[in-house]
Image 1 (tube, helix red, strand yellow):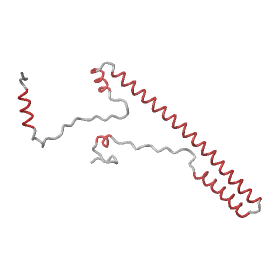
Image 2: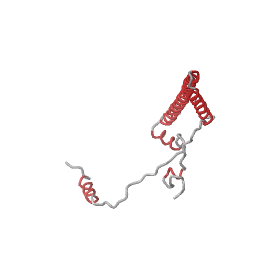
Image 3: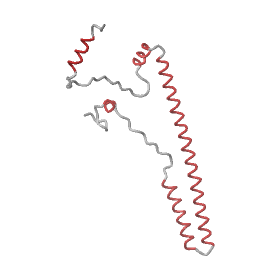
Image 4: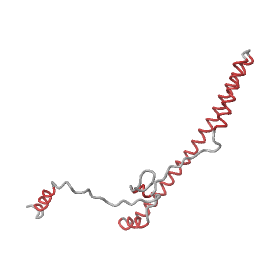
Length: 158
């Protein structure tokens, strides 16, 4: 025994099998600034699934804590790397200066002096050529128009 609509569904599918000029279905996309969705969206989730709002807030708090932990870890590793560079730089300068001193005291005044002067010049160039504070480059933020696709890469409207 077949279902009463089985023939109608098959006929309907057969009629539309050759209909290729239809446009694909589109759905509106909502773009939000920041991590927290709009209150009406959270309220809709809460209505569909009780407790969803608390879960969304908890998830966002966990993501925020995770991101802050990553940033702390990055800051610590950057500080350790910077300190290691300084220590190794001083060690290299001292070794080269000791070699230059040995050359000078060993009767090779020309090469020893040249090595010592080059060592001091390079040390001064590195010291003077570095910024006094770390430079942070902020990632460019897209405008709302650019995120929605109605602007070019620079945020200018089409």
